[in-house]
Length: 90
View 1: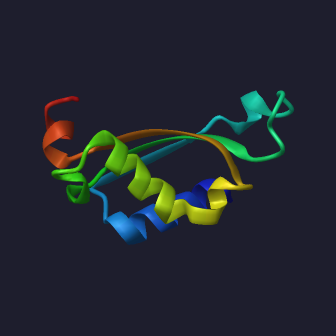
View 2 (view 1 turned 30 degrees about the vertical axis):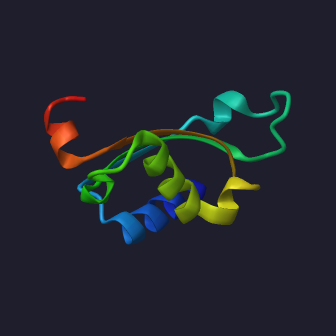
């Protein structure tokens, strides 16, 4: 369910050409410091990343996901690319 919510929020805000979400939560369940949130890796390709630094791209995603970062998401790996970067295989 959380992966679907992540997808919906990112699709609505960033209108990505590509979005892939991998849920690694089962591999991390019960480890030290995890109070129940999931572990996800997101690859997202959006024109809205044009002219933005890597830090700015990550900040955009954290802002979009908002309160989910407090409870539902324990760890989030982000690969945020522009369409040009994606076409070059970066």
